[in-house]
Every structure is written in C-alpha cells, then in structure tokens.
Length: 374
Image (cartoon, rainbow, N blue to C red; front, side, top):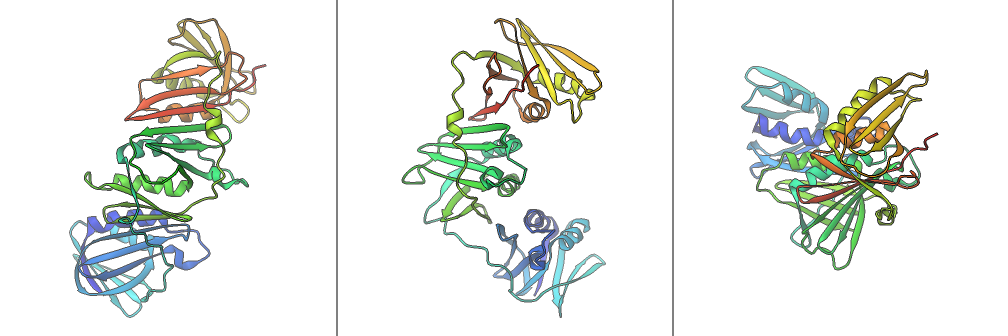
C-alpha cells in the first residue's frame, strides 16, 4: 500500500474513529484502526464490538492495500503534521508516514484480520432524521443519561420512540427524566417502533453530525438488534441495548393543582452559581421560597454557614417553599439555551417538578424530584 492523502481530511476522519476504538481494552485489536486503499479512496474502520464507524475519503493511491495500525498513535502523529498531502506506505510490518522531511514508522499488521462491522443497505429501508434538531437534543438531554453501573442497562442509553410523524427521545438517571419531542418525521416503520441507543453511540452521533457537510442528510436504518446512522460517506453502527426502558409517558402529566412559574434562565444560573461556594458532599440541597414577583434561594453547608440569593420571577400566586439537589438543577440550567423556561411545581413537593421549553422545533420537558424540606 502507498497513498497520498490530504492531512486535514485524514485527520477529520481519524478524529471520529479515535472516539470509537476501545483504548482500555484487553483485546489488542480493538485499539487499532483498519485502513484499506482501493479505487481512488481509503476506507477506515474502528470498533469496540458494540459500536463501529466506517468512513471513506478520496486519496491518490499508487498501490492498493490493507493495514491495521494503533489508532491513537496514528491520530497523534497526523495531528502534529502541517497541512498538505502526507504520504503513507507499508514496508514489511511497519506503516511509514512522511511529510516535508518529517518521518514516522509505526508497527502495523498487514492483513484483514479485523472484527467485522455489519453493513446496512439504506436504499432498502431508512428514514431521514432532522440533523440540526438532533444536535440540540443530544447536547441537551444527555445530562439525564444514567452513568452508574446498574442492572437495568437500558437507563445507560437514550430511548428512541417513533410514533407516526412524531419522534420522542427520553433519558433518565433515576433522579431526573428528560424528554424531547419532534413532530415532522417521514414514515419509517409500519407500526410504532422504539429502541434504546447507548450513550456512546448518542454522543458519537453528535460528532458525526457536526463534521458533516451542510447538504448531507442523516439516515437511520435498523436491522434486528443493530442500528445504523449514515451521513455522506460515514456510517455509524451500534448494537442496541435491551429494550426495557421505563414507561416515561406515565410521568408526563403534571398534577392538576401545579402552580406555573416563568423563570429567566440567566437569573436561575446566576443564583445557583452564587450559592456554589457553600456546595459540598453534605450540602447539596438548595431551598427555594417563591413569592409574588421573586424567589429566594438558600444553601446551608454542614458547618452551618448559609448563602442566600434573591431573584425576580414571573409568579403571582401564594408563597410556598420547595427544594432540589443543586447538582441536578445546575446541570439542567447549564444546557438550556433559551431565555425562559416554564416550571410546573407542586406546592407540597410531593411530585415531580416540570421544566418545559421549546427550541428549534423541539419540545423539551425536564422532570426533577424535589427534596424533602425539614
């Protein structure tokens, strides 16, 4: 194999691949990337067996061939090279890399003994997903994906729920529930369809969208327990998690006696930031007292020190008090990129608080459990 390829184009694809390969694996091959040169293009693959990515790009191919090389080493080398064409070739069991007097030799495997990444024919059955809306959804609801090791692995992913022309996304960490709803989907499944995509797949999909050309459409296809996303010449594969996600819709009806409050996102972010100096392992509860026209937020640390801040709010009802875990609340307001959110609160703190907002054609609902106030 001997090829010349544009450094910037090559680095862009390696950036995506490097997020897929398993850097801490006990299976050495999974920390490598597979490269094949043929027909004027190079094809690059990376996988951790659960998630896989295949990309391709144009190259000047003098000699076709295959090589398997450590992904991180290759990425780190290409990253420090200057712009322009770089040359790669195989010599015995090494991959040689040269650019303007710079030379590297990397131990490599010259065969096709690489784990198989399933293929999918998108012309058979696929649906176009809304790219710009999906980037917002991934950036927003990911805060509620469970990170703990639990028996129910479905909570370690995101629930995709297709319902006619509507697509719902749901994520939960047992303390919060985040749901995003988009209306305007083309028909894909004969009946209602849903599945759980891993957190890694969800986040890697965002990177793939962000690196895509503006005119490239995002396609989704499913083959049994496998899911596929395609943008341009990039295909992301993932094995689905067990589909036993919680019945998220059963939580989406606020109590009839909930009070409605309009909160300016900046004011809430400022309030939480001003309380953080007293935040600690044993001082996670922020207490809110809502009155007409304003709220008072307070936090007390384990030694008895108290922080109190006061902000304006759109509320004209009777005074009441409620409390939340400041970490969960702070995570939510840090990802909300709108001016205001609507809050539906239970004065008795007996049920979820609903925070709702609309952005870029998507309706978002964030549910958080209040904490007991002594």
